[in-house]
Image (cartoon, rainbow, N blue to C red):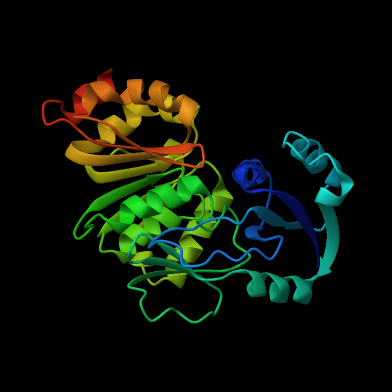
Length: 303
């Protein structure tokens, strides 16, 4: 089998935009690497800083058309020069070796680590998510996923019921299970995402705690935590469903939201939350709040 590899060279501030655009395409794997030999020395605990110049590399099926991807990337400032974008074909064995070499263990918060392939687990790692480097839907490098993982790092999931709505590869829900959640419901409208989530749950030995389901078959439960890393518009539309699913006092974590969209998304949830805490990263935000003890699930869903 032949694979198509795309490399895009951009400034640090534009790397999240490229990553976000490509994640909406049929990308099989995505990495960010240093493009100019600018090492980042001694980052703070839990930080995943980017270099001044970044190479975003994406892997596609070998039959993927180049033209639509090129047009999409034209939306990114500074990508209009030929030397900024390159494509090449990789043979089956070649891509696996190349991508394994690029992925490195990543830390989120104090105790969460994502470790790709068969790489050695850092001795200080407490909660470890193992991922295949050829995985679709991202691996935690995007600011929205990073924001969610950092919140998850500080939460006690023991004996909790969790909903990961818009689960993608199941990264958030699986980490919650690794940290002790007894039941995690992963919801996504893409069947491939549900397959990826199931595979990752088995790889991380938490399959007994993970249930995957399409939105049409999702039946609201009394969840202690809801994690939803999607986009602003779907989050607004899903407010009645998510609020009806969250128990009183439960935690709601929303991401996939640009800073300028935060107020509109907050307005959809504020009547039923005690307060909303906003945390930003590279132009993206995470919203977190607890459901008010004054509102029942049925009342929230009826609005």
